[in-house]
Length: 314
Image (cartoon, rainbow, N blue to C red; front, side, top):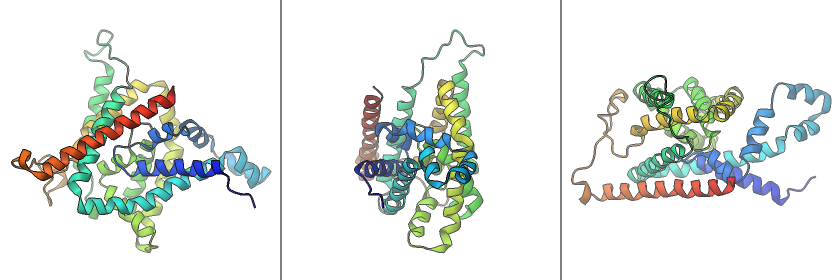
């Protein structure tokens, strides 16, 4: 039997760090993959898997397919991701229940800084060459903002989420996880499925069969999303990076209300703006000061990750 060597463990640990990032809105698993040096190999491996794998399996056998398609690497990364998600999702649920203001303030800081991080990756807008008064990127930014607002108005309540909707959430969130700077967990927050999936992971590890359908629907959606959109996203991000980023930035800006720490309960999802409030006497309010502190911590985390990511690319 082949012994597990140190490099296998390192790849698994890198997958674990990606998994931790993937359950925190505002921290991108793609960014962690860049920092740890596995992003390009991960995308190359995912894009290399196609329908030919079955024919190769029949002709060459499992051992050669495992080597030729780099499945050992993919298995270790994915195992690390799932290990972290299952373990740490329980911890996040406790924080949501006991420290909601601090946690959502942290998430708001993470996302706000991520928007700045993405803006710094874009090229300077050229207003002189624009055909439609404003540069195309501004229109894409507005499309992203309005799309995010529309989703917040129509998203179902947590009690109305079914397995078909979770399959859709799996498709959308996994595509976000593949892009540096975009948080898949944040997409789940926007879609209203974040806490549902955290609870699903918590119950699946307890072998609670009531949550198996939710889990497999989301997992199937994630697999489907990877194969349907990974090549398109890679192509779009490479060939039309500026346009893609502005659309994503607009989407993130428009969905910021979903992370606002202070919300009234039992209000219709279509009234998400009215749902938000600022505490009275906020400078003297301990919860408000706590929220500001964790917002700043969230911003600092992204700035530190950006620095490491930038140094890794050099």
